[in-house]
Length: 349
Figure (cartoon, rainbow, N blue to C red):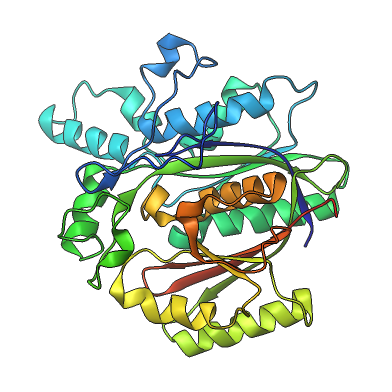
């Protein structure tokens, strides 16, 4: 698998859209990392005010990558666990409130998970391949695999691939009751200080223009692997096989851990981190984003910035290594069951 990233865009709880500043850290508010919303200049105001949050940020992140293209991209591939869940709940509540009478069609249209990809297609008059992957914590990884297979079969084509999820009141309350968020008040800086169950809620969106050509690419997504397991030793063994197959006797320069402060997941992250030698820097990123199903999309965006700039924000560093930034391995675990490895490398020496 070789998927080259040429452009990217990210809307997150940090300064990642427009003027980027990864060295400054924005805190969580009320135990949630909510996105810093831009002005969405590319979206007409009449359309913007009818958009749900997930559709708004997904479209807002995608349009800057598509605006100046001479031809439409050959596919729009989005990964999301929940899509516009907030609009779905609004529509269901209206059914009860108005007794199935005069319902608001906008909430229904934007309540489906494919609303993000379809809205991007409509706004760019794109009638090409348009699909949404909905596999909870592996939705974005499946979107990447889909894009990689298409790029391998159609070498002249380019694709938009991304991951989007919002904090909806419905999902937040369900996950809170299920124990996935901490009871303690967390700002983000102290996320890794608590040896207790749960993490902190997050949301965000990252979009990438990708194809199979290395010319002028920012980074290369060399490999993606997805795993279902509740056994840390099995996941660590899978990582050994993954590294041997894709890097041989070498190791990545940077190991980006999805560690999120949840004591129940420590065994998974520790087992994988232990496979890295002393020359690999170990980074963490969820004190910037919070925890949600497609957070690995922002991890890939951050990895692209690190590879392209050869700079690592100090607040991300858990352990310093050899100082190299030419390859990044991302490991993420979602709710003790879903795991993924994403390996990125520099295109230029």
